[in-house]
Image (tube, rainbow, N blue to C red; front, side):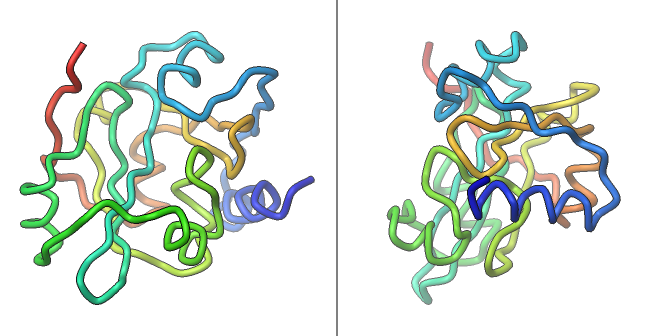
Length: 159
């Protein structure tokens, strides 16, 4: 078992969650791939999108699969000008590679916001540290364990 997957399992257990991690034969690197793998709506997929502030810190936005982060709205929430975090920064702060970034189990904490669209579902699916592992969780539980603030920061992705 990979270190990343173990870290996610440990984080879920530490929060008292019985959220089985599903291994998929196909990639779940993108929201569309993940939705296909578990046969759910694309908006039931939690995208963990990371932005970097001027100080080098990362800001995590848990976004419904069919939405995109509006950089201006995200920057206002963060109180800092943000830019997309590069793969090196993402790996250094979260311990995960892009395409498998889980909302839990990060090496270092970051401020976290959550797309209200995710709250429209009984359960949502998030990456579990690899591009082939995901787990289901109730949005309210995800918000509680991550400490995410629910806020509007998205626009619908173009079709």
